[in-house]
Length: 306
Image (cartoon, rainbow, N blue to C red; front, side):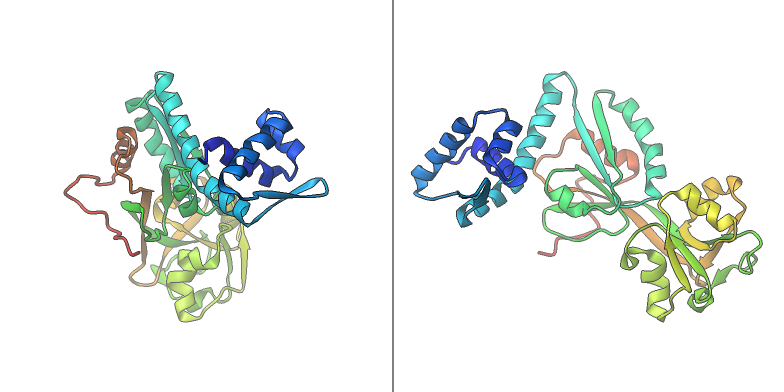
C-alpha cells in the first residue's frame, strides 16, 4: 500500500537529487529511507529510481508516483495545518492569493473587520502577482483567489465582489486632463506605465487598445502603486488604474482621471474558492464580508465548463 511516507520521500528525492540530501531534509537515515522504498518496490514489483553517480533518477513509475505526491501532499499538508489550528484552540487559517496589484489596498479594508469577527483565524496574504493563482487554488496553496480575470474550470467557484471603472491617469497639466474621455488612437504617442503584468491581462490593452490595433509609443513597468503615480504626476507617462484607487490617493498626487472611451471600461473583482462539499464557516464568512452573495439560493456567476 502506498503511504504518505512514500510520497514524501519521492518528493524529497526529486527536490534534492541525492539520497543523502533527501534523508537530511526528512531527518531520517539513508538506510531507513531506502528500506521504506524497497518494501514498496517489492510489493508492486517495480523500480522507482535508479542511481546515476551520486544523483538519483526516477523511473517511469517513480515519475508517476511523484506526480501523485505533488497533487496529494499539498492537500494533506493543508489538512495538517487546519487540524493543528483546531488543536491549538484556533478556528483555522485562511490563505489569500492576489492576482491584482491595486486590490491589495481594497483587501486591507476587508481584513480589519474580518479579524475582529474571527479572532481565532489566522490570515495570510500572498502578493505574488505573477503566480498562477488558479493552480495555487487547485493545489491547496491558497484558499481564496482575488482576481479580475476569473477562469472557468471544474472544481472552482468565482463570486463577484465589486465593480470598478478602469480609467486613464494623467498629470494635472496633461493635454487630456480636461477631457471626459479619450479614444485608443490618442495613446499612440504616449508612454504607458503599468504594473508588470502580461499585456493580454491588462484591461487597457485587452479591452481598449488591442481591439483597435493601437499601441503606445513606449510601455514600461512599475510594481509599486505610489511610485507609479509619482511617475505619472511628474509627467513621465500615463497609466490605467481603477478609479476608486486613484480617488483614494489623488490628494497625494497631482493627477487627473479620464475615461477610456465614451462608455468607459468597466470591470469586476472576483473571489475564487474551491468547490468542495465542505468549506469552513470562516471562509464563507470572509466572502460575505467582502460583499459576495454565497446564499444557497444564488448560483455563482461563473458556471463550470468542463
